[in-house]
Length: 355
Ligand code: SAM
Ligand code: FES
Image 1 (cartoon, rainbow, N blue to C red):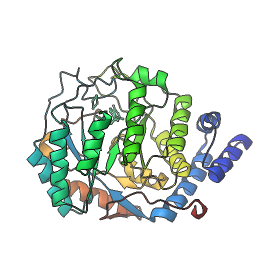
Image 2 (cartoon, rainbow, N blue to C red):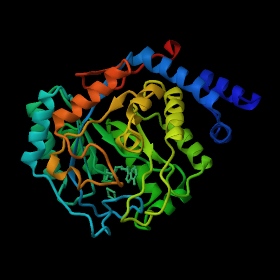
Image 3 (cartoon, rainbow, N blue to C red):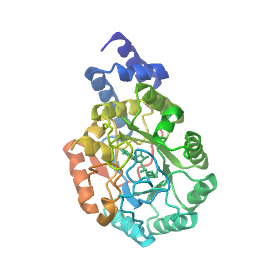
Image 4 (cartoon, helix red, strand yellow):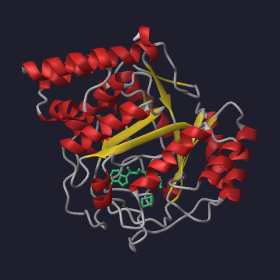
């Protein structure tokens, strides 16, 4: 550990804040020793607020049809090799019924930006889920929509919205998305969601094409300022039928390092150990939890569609039934001294003095 990194880490622990340049240096000059110090502190802060409980979110991948063409994404509209599907309302409800029995108290409806799921359709599904499982939270991860759409969905009962910002650098954003998408609209969406009252989640890929420590520093600064309720990060993994097929996957080591930094930046944040992390390394999610994450997202989608929701190559958890996925993750968590809990898993706000 150099004097520079030591003082940066000290400042981060004390203030939960660094300048953008300091974040960039923290990343560029990191050593195994720095990672170990940050990991210990991240786990300490997490355990003060959440103990060793891990929240589960039942992920239901409701459609792989998308009007967008994000260069990194396996279900982008230009991928003609993707076999498209869309779940029916009844199938989605059935997934939540199964999930509820298995102890899930949060359902995440995620999908491409599929015009079929307009406000009317989505509101009716949200209402049905809430009627049947009133003590469960509904999280939406359905991409960019208008403010009035977000308002309607919130009124219908949606509790949380997860929309990764992808990158906090507008120039980098341009390199990952076609011209019809804009950084400004992404930010507008996140601000609207928060303003409407959703528990709001952002996030980014680690190692996405053209990303350097400078872009990551901007991401960290953005999270520090925005203070989202949730922040999802996972390594970028190439998909064979995208323009980024020949790019290298993100680093597991850097993802784990950033999970610890994020926990320290905003200790109560809900941070998933993602499937992408588990795809690159078999104990990726366990390592994620041990680096500061406190959420896992077992798959509740019907097995028949799981392989089709292929955002990147070799995605795991595509062959198992929901109960198997839950049990598998439960065992993984027990193996590292953590336990999955039956709980909505809302963010626990805290008083600063308690950290
Ligand atoms: N359409 C919604 C949206 O845009 O937020 C939700 C679905 S989108 C597929 C969910 C997330 O998958 C994206 O925010 C992105 O960060 C991640 N993702 C897409 N392609 C990926 C890849 N090749 N590697 C890792 N993560 C990827
Ligand atoms: Fe739409 Fe990925 S491009 S979900």
